[in-house]
Structures are given as C-alpha cells and as structure tokens.
Amino acid sequence: MPIQTIETQPFSDQKPGTSGLRKRTERFAVPHYVETFVQSIFDSLEGFRGKTLVIGGDGRYFNDTAIQRIIKIAAANGFGAVKVGQGGLLSTPGASHVIRHSRAFGGIILSASHNPGGPDGDFGIKYNVGNGGPAPEKLTDAIYAHTKTITRYLTYDVPDIDLSRLGVQQVRGMTVEVIDPVADYAELMQQLFDFDRIRALFASGFRMQFDAMHAVTGPYATRILEDLLGAPKGTVINGVPLPDFGGGHPDPNLVYAKPLYDLMMGPDAPDFGAASDGDGDRNLIIGRGRFVTPSDSLAILAANAPRAPGYAAGIAGIARSMPTSAAADRVAEKLGIEMHETPTGWKFFGNLLDAGRVTICGEESAGTGSNHVREKDGLWAVLLWLNILAARGESVDDIVRDHWATYGRNYYTRHDYDEVDATAATALMAALRERLPTLAGSRLDGKMVASADDFTYLDPVDGSVSGQQGVRLIFSDGSRIVFRLSGTGTVGATLRVYLERYEPAHGQHDLDTQSALAPLIAIAEAVAGIRARTGRDAPSVIT
Ligand code: VG1
Ligand code: CO
Image (tube, rainbow, N blue to C red; front, side):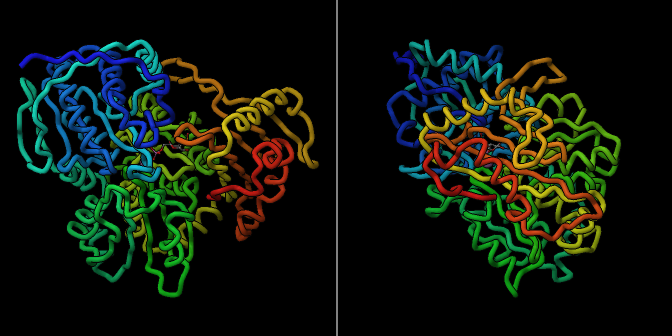
C-alpha cells in the first residue's frame, strides 16, 4: 500500500506555548488539525529515519484517537519503530524515561496537563527530544514556522493498532511495541530510593493518602506505593484514569485538591498526603496539619536529597524558574553549589541537567524533578519525601519548621486571574513594561524598588537568549512581585502575580501567608491596576 499524501492548509493557531500546543479539544477535532501539527513536528526534525518514536498520553478524551493518527503519520514519514504505552497511557515523566532508556529519537506526549479533559475540556500535543526533555525553543519556533506554510501530510490508510495488547505489531515497515507504561519507571524509582526503608515506614503504621485525581498517575502510584512499598490498599484514591478525570480539574492545588487538604487539616489526618496532576508531572505535598509550598518543597528536597541512595553523593546544583521563591537559593548557598534562575517551563532546565551543572530543579507551580529524567516528576517528589521522612523519623511539619529555623522562611503566594480578556491582559503587561524605567529606584508604599525589569534568560550552556519572561519588581529588602501571562491557558488570558517576602531564620515564621504578604498584594494592585483593567475584584485561584 502506498504512502498517502494528503493536502492540507496551514492553521494560524498552532504556536506551542509553555508546554506544547494546548487548545480546546474541539479545536483538535477539526479535520487535519492534529495531522498538520504532527507533520510540522516531523518536517522540523532531521535524521529520524529508521529510529524509534515514543508515544503516550494522560488518557484524556481524544488520547487514543490522536495516538492512532500519529502512529500512521510516523510510519509514513519513515520512523522505524514506535513504543506506545498500553491503553495509550504514559505519564509525562514516564515518557521522558522511556525515551532516554530506549535511546529513542524523541517522543510525542498527548496531554493538557492540569487542564480539564473531555469534549468540552482541553487537549494538547508536545514533542520531546532525545534527552527525554521538552523541545527547546529553537525547535518549537521552527515547528510553528512550519505550521504556517505546510501544504501536505503523509499517512497510511491502514487499520488501527490494538493499544490494549502488549507486544509488537506492524504498521507497514514500522514496528509498534505496546509497552507496560509503569514497568520501566518503577524500576528507575527503585534505583533512586531506599524502598526497604520506606516499606518499613509503612509497616510501622505510617499512614498516607495519595489522590491520583482520576489521571495518569493512578496506575503508577498503585503499583509503586501499594504493590511495591506495601502501603495499605486504599492509600491511592481516584486511581483509575478516566477520559474526563471524573469531571474534575486534575490540578493538585489547594482549590482543586480541596478534599485532600481538608482531610490533612482535620482530626483524623494521616501522616502524609500527596496528589499529582493530569499527566503526572506535578505534585502536591501536605503533612498532617502542614501544607508545603512547592517552593519550600524544592528547597527541602534539595537540602535533604543525600538521604536517598540515588543522591547520596550530593547534588551538583539547583535550578528554579524565575517566579519560584528564592528558598532554594539559600540551600545552594549553604552547600556552595551552583544556583540557576530560568524562565517558566521545564524546557529551560534540559541544558543545565545535560551539562551536569544541576541535579535538582523546580517550579512554584508544583513541579520538582531531577537529572533522572528531563521532565518534572510528581511521583518522584512524593517518593523522595517518603525517603526523607523514613530516614529522619520526623513529621512533615517538624521538617518544614526545622528548615525555616535554619534558612529562614520565604513567604510566598501566587494569585491567578483566569480567563481574563486577552486584550486587557496584554495591555496591563504593556503598561507595566512601559513603567519599568521609572519604577526602579522609586518608592512604592514606602518600600524601595531596588530593580525593575522584564526577565531575560541567557542560557549558560548554549548561549541562547529568551526575553520577555516576566516583569519583576525587586525591593531592597529582598521582597519581590512578578507579573506574567500564562502560556498554557486555552481561553482568553491568565494573569499570574507571584508575591514573595523573606523572613530571616530567627524571625516570625507562623504568620498566615496572605496576611504576611498583604502589603505586597496591595502594591501589586496599585502598580498594575488589575481591578480596573480586568474587571476582577479577586484572583480566581490563590496558591
Ligand atoms: C504553567 C506553570 C509552569 C509549568 C507549565 C507546564 O505554565 O506556571 O511552571 O511548567 O504550566 O506544566 P504557565 O505558562 O501557564 O504559567 V504542566 O504540568 O501544565 O505540563
Ligand atoms: Co502536568
């Protein structure tokens, strides 16, 4: 059967954002939309003929449809083999590991991460390169340029693959191997962490609840926590991936994982609570009576990593996205290791990890990970916490307080204004950028603005420059306000305001976060005119 060349036309809206192309599912369902984007990816790559492509997704509605089409396009374009997770499932970190482990050319991950799924929800397609990490900006720019001129895609008119059957099948000259999505990943986790010690912790009566939010982490968490580590059955809840995530919003924050939060703050709280997002790369960590902010979690994991066998030799350096709090910087300073500040999105960590300059990375948006893969990894963070809890024999709350007493506390919050009018949001950012030169050196509500800029990142490894990564106001006492627009939203614009204030080691660490940051919140409103410009009285989500 010959390769089919299907004529197509460019779509004007296929620009990848912070993490791939994300749109409403109905947009992806438009004829040729998926094919045009996937062909644009392949047309922007060189040298993949005969090589392996990894494919998997978070199981949301349209996952299997997209996978079947991608397999045929991959075959027609000359890939030699595809590895696809059984049922079309692979978590984002799981896919990253399979790409690395099988020395694949790259991978395609189908996910809109923490955005809701279903016919009325969101869908997404992301390309990862051979190191297992998200395509760098140079490549996503090339893909976008190609989507604007594409005229055809290649495919085969052949039956679908049976994604439920493990083992090898054929699509023309290409082999398709359906793999267990969890096996390789579970193996890797056993190399990094002290499973015996964590098993002993559970055996001693330690209680945990893991909320998989009906997303992809369910099978991973069940296998690892309950089957391999002996946590009691029922430790993992909402463990079956559903196409619409059970109607929920698979974002593990205090708004969408509220039942877990309430449990952890209540009288019958287990020792440890955790959750992850749609595609399994984010994590939420809550101890009994103690929510751990992702920024603090990054710092605590970095400070304690050598307690896990995989990091016993110490860590080379830490990287965090710019809006993430500077808590980790204090750990790096004490350890005398490199610290890097990158733009938002995991793609900026890849070069630093590949060059061996950093071992642990994190973002304030509940993403932490290490050099074991090239994505953030929700379950990895949970297992490292478990390893640390088992090794220290203290509670989450004790560990957090001890950390603040040693390093000080970075009070931190993020205010999101979702689905605001895109024109209004762009105008708000433009007005801020215009004011930057006069803001530096001025006083706002009595606080001295030490510097005001729009963050530009110079990659120390390949010298590439990424501009307009967020407006920062840095005050002379180290407090910060950062404004940026989300690159993952699918409707209107999402304005994110990040607020941070440092309290030294001997200071007051028990304040309520929103009260501790109230003066900065007021300054942010005064400087940006959020209410007047967006018509919103309050953020839609506070994390
Ligand atoms: C958000 C987060 C960012 C994260 C990205 C992808 O991006 O802020 O830290 O890397 O989502 O995560 P943005 O542009 O909306 O702020 V995931 O778990 O959605 O792949
Ligand atoms: Co995610």
